[in-house]
Length: 161
Image (cartoon, rainbow, N blue to C red; front, side, top):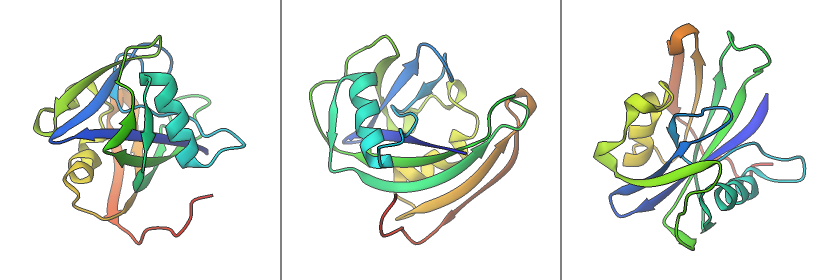
């Protein structure tokens, strides 16, 4: 299982999403994020990926939760543990890169039909602050069908390593 990240930039009632232009998830709206490198913590990876993908340097990240995500029908995909962060502070202005095209969305106008199908199972509660911290497990089967999902409130970890 690979450790990965997502980082949601918040501006009042708005959320920054970005259209993935290439690679895994191309054609879908998502938050900036990606794989945690061997020498990084998930938080440092979230910062680096956000710098690379939308050109801003996030500050004061808050860990919202972690989801174990599986796609058993996808060859070579052993699963991702996704560490999900949010922040309201960053340096710079979001800009399009070779990887992503950012856009602000009002929290009630999130384009779920153009995102990963599982996002509508956890993202509304994450954005609303329903849980101080959550964990979960999602299994996405053939045709983007969600075969299994379990999202629940959990105690926040002291440190993520």
